[in-house]
Image (cartoon, rainbow, N blue to C red):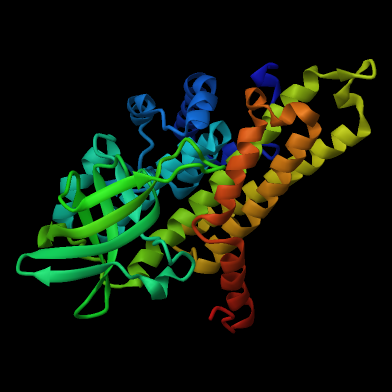
Length: 393
């Protein structure tokens, strides 16, 4: 539908902030999403399955853990990593989420919390995507309050740890090779991180069914029933929830970028549709109200992308704070919700047909809006920075 070369949503040319090598890689990511993902993703979204046959092709792009250096990782900038998340989200938010879990949460935890030996053992294979990672933090009864409410326990038994509890909404959890589990030490009450290599006795993962959003991502309910993990698999530099929060601060910016990508995907499909659609004997792009919708959508995308770009620059120079990440995530997802709705509105009834793609972005936006920090929690983190007073109970 339409010539892709005539449709762009990078209105302020933020890609010019990248060097030539990074721009070339970004274009390869875009081509992969357009040529390999878009033609098949609606079928997998409908079936609630992830197209795992795409993983080798994604691996060849060399983008897993893009912002991390050493141990086989690409060592690119946070800005580049964010724009990759945006391109993935522009093509399909489920694929962006899969990579956000593997390359962001799982590899980020390894980079920040693993010992040198552990990094050498796992990160190179994760960068090559020979080992896929998952990140187990959220629990059935604890989401926004998980910092204070982790019920999954870890009990030391000689040279091993015994894990018991449940984790919910764990992306990649049912097929990952390495599942990072955060648990509370029953003796010290500290939150510790563990790498559970699969398969593991006592570990079970059941995919959640009947989701209305990100249907092509497998989110698992994980049950840990006496799972034994050797001390060598305890993340040696994860000794409190603060270490978990350090991971989430970085990945929250990536989620903000993927929200911009979701907005861009919906906008670009709607624009291509508008360029071809005639009503009342005229192209609908000649209607004032259609042009107003396009202006609103592009304004949201441009403002959000500029905000995310600055957050990534702060991250690259070590100045990113919790409130910066929360502002990026909270604002970009609010604007995303508006944008995908306007894209659907522009397309009328045709906007709810999967064949026109926008409906998938509308549905997927609902998950992006909530995960990695709800709007409410992010607003209170920013509010605390503004006022110096915490409103979080």
